[in-house]
Image 1 (cartoon, rainbow, N blue to C red):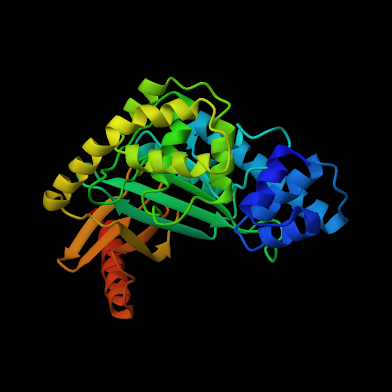
Image 2 (cartoon, rainbow, N blue to C red; image 1 turned 90 degrees about the horizontal axis):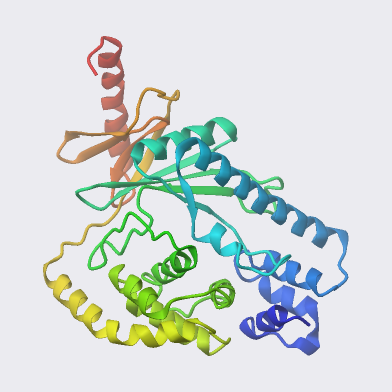
Length: 351
């Protein structure tokens, strides 16, 4: 049994004496973990039937498709992969990191919509979800989804493109548009960011395996801790490394955790002070109103406010009603009525 498989048995609380079937059974209760477990069992030489091999083959094809898509979009639009895809590169050969979503960050809104247009053009996209968050500047996030090869068994393809790599919590941790150029540090920042909204829950098996991959990379402790502090993530990074240390050796990350210690109290004080003054800025989610013909001449979306109670986001690919909460039927009807008149005005050259 390999080290990674033994770790999976521990993380999933599976009895090694019960065999790989029990490990896989427990993995199926967790999102996307079956593919990770199957790949670990294949690396260990465990025999499996054609259905399991086919499932793993489709998962590997999915990961390869995401990798090709990221390269193509990077060349064409300047977006780049963050979080899952870079972390997968630190896994041992043959061990498949689950990739439910391809996460991309765009240098600006124009590049974001260029990437979305290419995705809509090249794939049978069925859903396009849009959110706005932050303030001065405003940031945009778009998630496109389409069916997998076997829609009854496999999860949908999901590509998430955003103008801000780190969205924060809408309150005391602000939006940070850019990540550092050092990829291992960047991956550690992304893992710490993912804990902002889940600090009460222990990190899952995938996150701990991500740490296991990073602990084989070189880190300059003082510099890494300073960067995490500058990104307002020292508490989340420290808690994450503390939990990981209960399950695996941290290697160079042990020194990073030690260097984080002086950064914790200042960040907790800063957050307490910010909580008293910083307004909460919840994301505004788009309720789809209609898909449109691709507006190739639009570099950015247009935010319209026909009434004080109605905000519309018109994008190069679809139009949306914006609200922090789901829209009512009457609000949708009023928004579509406005868009009908907006279309007529545009046909007369008025927009």
